[in-house]
Structures are given as C-alpha cells and as structure tokens.
Image 1 (cartoon, rainbow, N blue to C red):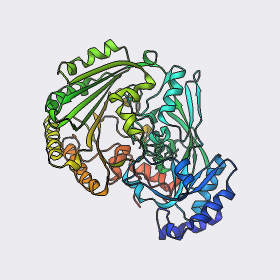
Image 2: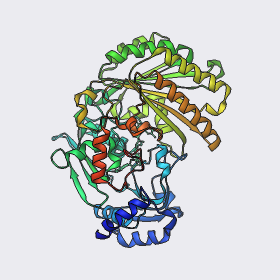
Image 3: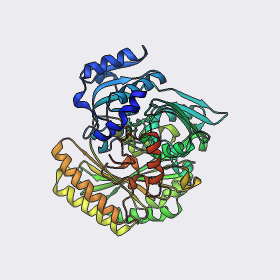
Amino acid sequence: MLAVWLLQPLVALLVLPYNSWALVDPQSVHDDLESLLSPGAEVALRSNSTYAEDFTPRYNIATQPSYIVGVKPALVGDVQKVVIYAVERNISFLATGGGHGYSTSLGRFKGGIDMDLGKFNSIQVDSLAKTMTIGGAVRANEVATALQAVGMEIPVPQCPCIGFAGATLGGGIGPYSGLYGAISDSLISVELITAEGQVLNVSQTEYADLLYGIKGAGSNYGVVLSLKYRIYPATNDGYAMNADMTFLGSQNGSVWALIKQFSVSQPRELSIGISIRYSPDPTLEGVIITANFIYAGPQAEGKALIQPFINLKPLNVNISTVPWNYIPATANDGAIVEYGCSPGVYYVPYGVNLYQVDIPNLVSSVGYMDRAMATNPELRGASIVWQQYAHYGFQLYSQDTSAFPFRDVIAFVQVDGVGSSASQGLALTQFGREMRDMLQNGSGRDELSVFVHFGHGDEDPAAWFSRDNLPRLMSLKNVYDPLGIFSWYNPVKRY
Ligand SMILES: Cc1cc2nc3c(=O)[nH]c(=O)nc-3n(C[C@H](O)[C@H](O)[C@H](O)COP(=O)(O)OP(=O)(O)OC[C@H]3O[C@@H](n4cnc5c(N)ncnc54)[C@H](O)[C@@H]3O)c2cc1C
C-alpha cells in the first residue's frame, strides 16, 4: 500500500487517468493475476479464445474499450487484489457489469484489464423487509423475474439485458419510474471497493455523502460488488397493459399535440415511449412513428387513457395485458429484446432531455429527419427515441438526495444511430449532432442537459450531473478517487 501512495504524485504528474498500456506485457499481467487470485477466479488473455467465450461482450462496438487481459474475480478479496495490483503498476482497469454502456468516452480506455463482475450474480429478496440485495453484474431481467415471483416490483430499464447495477449507478429510468422515481432512488446501500482496495459499506449512516454521489454518478467512485434496494408490493397484482401502435410520419404534429397534453397531467401508472424511424415500406412514404404505452393497472383503464391516440387512427393497434416482468419483451412488438440484447452493434448515440413539448420544433425536426433519410441511405439506421414518465415518482425525492438531477424532465430523448461501418459512423455522427442541436433548441433550457446513460460522451459533465451537483461530486472525487482511476465512463471531471 505504501508503494501506491509514494507513486501517486509522480504518476499524477505523468499521466491521468491511469493507463500505461504501451509498457505492459499482457502475458505477465495474466500470470501475475492468476497467481494472486482465488481458485474460483478466471483470467484470460484478450487474444485467447476463452476470452470471447467466457467474458461479457460489448453492446456497442463502434467505440469500445480495448483490453489486454480479462479477469473474473470470484471473491471480494479478488477484486481488492486486482485493484491494488493494477494501481501499483499503473495499469488501467474497468469494471464490466452488463457490457451495455455505450458512451464514446469508454473508447478512451486502451490496453488495460477488463474486470468482469460476472461472478457477482446473486439476488436475495426479503419480501417481509421489502428489500433486495444483488451482485454487481445482475441483469435487469433477472431482477424483474425474481421480484415478480414474490409479488414485488421496482423500476427496471426498458432493456432487460443491461446491468442493473450499471443502470443504477447513472440513476436508471424505466416504465415504473412514474411510480417510484429513478432506480437509484430505491438504493439503500452498496458495498464498494475504492481505488485503494478498501471495502466500504456505503449507506445513509456511513459515508452518506458517497451514497449521494453513487446515486447518479456512481461509476466515478469505485467498483460496486453488491447493492441493496427498497422494493414495493406489485401494482395491479403484477400485471400491466402494454399497447403498441404505428402512425404515419405525416401524423407527427397530431401525436405531439397529445404528447403535450399528457406532459402536464400524466398519470403515474402510465409511461409513454415514442420512436421515429425510417420505414423500408415504400407505401408508407418516409419515416414512421411507433408509440408504446405501458399502464400499471387494469387494461380497461389504460385503454381509456390512451383512447385519444387510438382516435388518430394509427396503422395498427396491439393491446395486451402482460405480467410486469414481460413488459420489455412485449413492448414495441418485442423490438427492445431483439435489438437491445444482441451485442456487437455499431452504435452512434446522442441524447437530449426536453423540459417542454415544443410542437413546431418537433415537427420541423421530424421533417428534417425525413428529408435527410430520403436523400442519404446511410442515415436510415437512425431513430429518435422518446421516453416520457410521470413526474410523481421523481418528485418523491428532493434534489439534494442524489446526483441524479432530472426530476422535472418531460422526455428523455435519444438519437440512436445504428450503422455497420466507420464511414457510415461519420454520417450518423454528423446527423446525431445536428438532431441533438435541433431538439436542444426546443428543450426549454439554454444549456444542454442529457441523462448520463444516453450521453454521447462529448458533453460537458454539467450536462450529465447539473451545475448544482458538480462541485459536490468533484469534492467526492478528490476524496475517494483523487487519481481519476474510475474516470472512463462520462466522468464528473475530465482528465
Ligand atoms: C439497448 C439499451 C437500452 C437501454 N435502456 C435503458 C433504459 O431504459 N433505462 C436506463 O436507465 N438505461 C438504459 N440504457 C443505458 C444503460 O443503463 C447504461 O448503458 C448502463 O451503463 C449499462 O450498464 P451495464 O452494466 O450493462 O454496462 P457496462 O458497460 O458493463 O458498464 C457501464 C459503466 O458502468 C460501470 N459499471 C457497471 N457495473 C459496475 C459496478 N458493479 N461497479 C462499478 N462500475 C460499474 C462500468 O465500469 C462502465 O463504466 C440502455 C442501454 C442500451 C444499450
């Protein structure tokens, strides 16, 4: 440990964050880790086929981290050893949960250790105490399935395959956020390994300031091995309405008018998802709009609420009642599972939060998208994705309780660019930036604000964490990670 602290000032002067890949021999790192760790741990050279078979693949391959060695620790002590080993030798390392983090900021990570937390996969549910404790690599669908089995619930993200811890560390949002807020609002405590290899039990009674930072900016402060949450008795006996419908692009003004009405009076049980994309069907003439409605209540009630959308005469309507944990598999006619759970996507992400529904701006943005896609086929893999939740759940918690700053957002919007090559990536990058700028102009805010998980990676940290939160988050960074070891994913401080 002493060696670490003696080295720190020198290393800090030379290179931040940690990364000395050019000097590192992968085989030595592999052999060192193998001899250090418990028999249950797994170590593989990145170049070895075992790595491709056993380690968590990346969702986004356009700008992914590059590794020399993968390690799957089996015990808390293994994680401590990897951290201390890597810090002492100035080798960068990155925790992997579900592998779905897609910010381009991760592409700065080159030649270090992939610390795959895949063996931290336990789920314990205590229905009496209304708590759940999970390992750092548990997936969203595993949480939903475990809670559904015992008649409980919690907000889960739309995509079932993402790491539940990974989502929580950035706040995390999903269809039941209207009822309960961000996923991180339900977080009670975590077990965290610091950059010094210390184990901290972080809760409201110990390290309360760090808990505030972990709820929204969590990937900045350490490796999280277990997380304890409040859980809630299932709404409507664990069943929800799912409704999908498709509109012509030319109907977008009418759709936005209804969206605007809902934005001021959205029932907490209702979540709305809108997706605008190019349709390969030439009879539909350009972009189409798919709308998804999830209602945590009886189907008749939900259907009555969304009747104004049905009155617009969509091209199709598909309404069903499903167990709460099947929502991600059912919503958008199953498209989320199909596209969100298949890693290896060439993905160019952009995002922007909207604080109002500016109909003229939205109509002109959709018109721009339609024209751009008509003339440039390389852009046809792009879509605008809109998630709108009631404010009720978010406003159960005051702003100073966590680093998640988006309690008054009307819509969390993504401009998803999916391509297959670097040249297409350039076109999608330009398009994504233009769309982000256009939408930002009608956002109701002077400065860009983006849900940290939907960020491209080029934003100012104030866009992800808010200007109000940043000073407190930077102070925490100075205390718990002064060398910037945990600064690869949309960091609070740029190095
Ligand atoms: C298709 C798709 C749909 C999505 N839908 C939603 C949604 O509906 N709602 C939502 O909130 N988000 C959504 N996201 C975003 C998602 O929450 C983030 O990408 C999140 O970072 C994914 O976590 P992960 O563990 O899967 O990814 P990783 O790539 O494994 O991790 C992302 C970052 O978090 C860090 N990290 C992960 N786990 C730990 C841990 N245990 N300890 C310390 N650091 C850790 C990693 O080091 C990395 O820096 C979606 C993403 C995709 C690709």
